[in-house]
Length: 419
Image 1 (cartoon, rainbow, N blue to C red):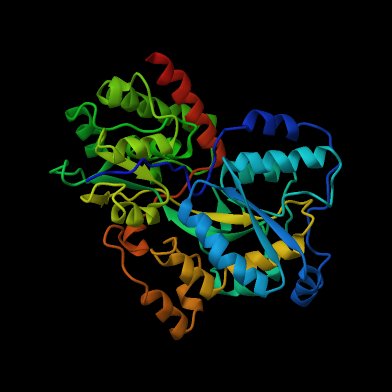
Image 2 (cartoon, one colour):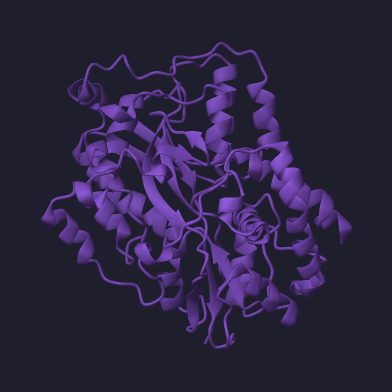
């Protein structure tokens, strides 16, 4: 089988440190704080009236072909029918969009920013929150929020940070390992067994170097294992907890390092490179926080035909991604219309179809009618990816963003520096 080159980066764009130095520098500046509340809109009719004729610039990672196609051919035409022009602005990293917002705020552009909507979560959301970069109190205005659970912790918190009406949910995701079943006869069933498999099969496994989001997620998954389970790790970060739990994490990572691809002397720079190694047969495992894409990658021959999802007994990390509106967005009302539309049953069903994008819905099945539930139930099943219910069984909660930063920095100084 001829396998085409594969280029991909994280779909959720969570917590990447690219550009974080400049982000932190900008947040330290004393720019006037812009209005961060949407309470100036009286009701939804007021929002749609203001939104009519607006053009919304949605800044999102541009490396996902299916995601790009969904926005361009499904979401944008639906927005046009609502009187709003939706323009997708492809970026290399979510931090690029946040940097633009913070730069414009620092320059005094308090109500005419060039970024109207951002696909975001995790560290970037927290950084923007700390800088007052987000419009808040707007999601209760969205009619389709009535179909979203108000108690689902994946949707009420973003890596431990309360959402507080500052972003609208868009997708759910589950951290997933995939492997070539034609090369791996006896796949591991726990994280501890996976580490043992790595030791027993030198050169056939690797992970992206943190702070790449996927590599960082792998570290958190190992942390839960070495700590004795996610229940042993408090979501809220503390130096005491980090100092207690991190030595076992880094010891495990140092132990497997010589058995990694290229003897652990080098790591893939990002998830794109790891996926390319897997597609080319240089390693037997890959990993992703966007398992929905596996279906197409196997079908088109990019990934081995024997690709299967590795289900761990203790579960894996789960989270959600969101749409956030900058506090200085020039077309905030139009952005609200797009976010509300993205939460409609029609859009969530279209996005959940593996042939379109395959992303897991954020809608609450209990809040849907029988006919609406039927639309999801009638979607074709993936021959590669299990259902979200199966994938998310025993889902592990995400840690606060401060945990992510500390773990990544510890890896740099204690694991990477030792090689």
